[in-house]
Length: 55
Length: 154
Image (cartoon, rainbow over all chains, first blue to last red; front, side, top):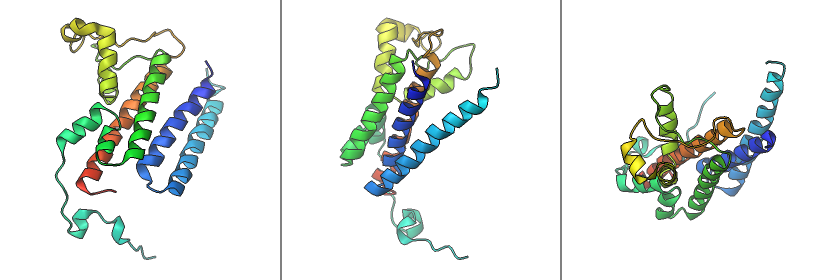
């Protein structure tokens, strides 16, 4: 089981959901999707990396 | 600095426009079948997307071996997980029925229900996260249906 792939899949589902929930136009949805998706993936990766030294 | 509020940003209450009462049947429908509330309101793209995303999240949770939220005596937070899981509507009920059977479903209420999943499995927590997330997304979709039905949102 690839944890990073699961992170990407989870971020993808949530980003698509909120893009359609909060925006009505296609360009707004695209922008919000990219923003939330990148924040979740990059943020999750960084937090995971920062937690790496801890037991 | 002056903040200029746009007219379309104002809620109907602020503009003096009447707000429609909440249609509880529609909200129940939106909860029970993810996406159906939006479909009934004519928001078909949103309905399909929400139904797909919520169902995909739920199925991913099951495939990973996640536990369905059920109340447990020893864990008060399990009630929160139960609430979140119940957000999946019919998906939650079918899975609960699958795990407990009809007899077990009624005899086990509320603290004897089985939530499934493998606690020592690698995907247990991830799966549970997907199941909870899917349920919470459906609750947000129900609130969205409420807003659209009352004319607060397009």
